[in-house]
Amino acid sequence: MNTRRLLVLVPALLAAPAVAHACAVCGGGNPANRFAFFASTIALSLLPLGLFAGAFLWLRSRHSDHGRTEFDDRDAVVPGGLSASGSASAVPPSSTST
Amino acid sequence: MASPEASAVRALPRRGFTDHVLFGMAIFVFTEVMVFAAFLSAYLIVRNSAPPGSWPPADQPRLPFEKTAWNTVALLASGALVARAQRAFRQRGQAAARAPLTAGVVLGALFVLLQGAEWSALLRQGLTISSSQVGGFFYLIIGCHALHAVGALALLVWCWSSLLAGRMPAARFGAAQLFWYFVVLVWPVLWLVVYR
Image (tube, rainbow over all chains, first blue to last red; front, side, top):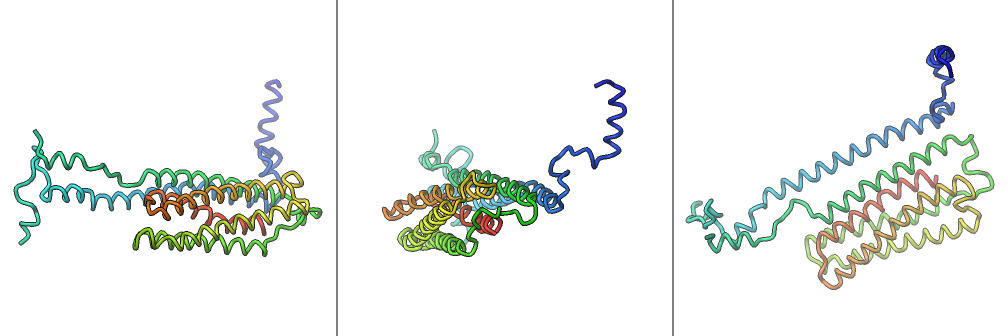
């Protein structure tokens, strides 16, 4: 296709988008079909975002639960925790609460 | 040299903040949700592009929407019973979860059997995967769901047999449950969109 034809064709297509059926669905002319296409595009775009948001909230709640009980196993073995040198604390926290 | 307490603490198993089995199943279910969403999207676009009154074609049988309501009830009841089994498992131990899980598995198997009977009737009436677009979509979407139902049911049966032996890990039950809830919850959507 030579340049002169392109210079005529491209502005003609830009000026008349209704005849430039780039997408078979958009050019179908059936309103129900166009609505189904539009609705499923919206659903398929939002669904993964919703799933990601749900997964994030679930992991966050698991993480906060984990934070509350993180040292329970250790405290069952060494009630006062460990010092930086790896030895047990002299005074367990339960004995200071009286 | 570290104290005996430090050694004991170091020997404790590391605990992550989520079970890997459960997390892996959640990722799998995530992808399956997208698969079914894509199927339904394609189905709705093709169905709506058919000329008015031509879906389903005149020579093809109608899908048994009302009759399939019983299958739907069985599946939803199965989901509720599995949820009840989980609650009993958490609160009162493995023995308490046996009865509701058994009932849930039986109702799940009933759903699969009823679906099989329905497919057999539709095939006899001439609805095959290549007879029309309706048949193609029906066997693709509902068949894919049936495969998931059989897989999830197999997982539940595995959990049930572990439960009878009194050694079921909570993570395995959680993962099987998640898969089953997906099968249960996606079904009413498929029923309302594809059968109606």
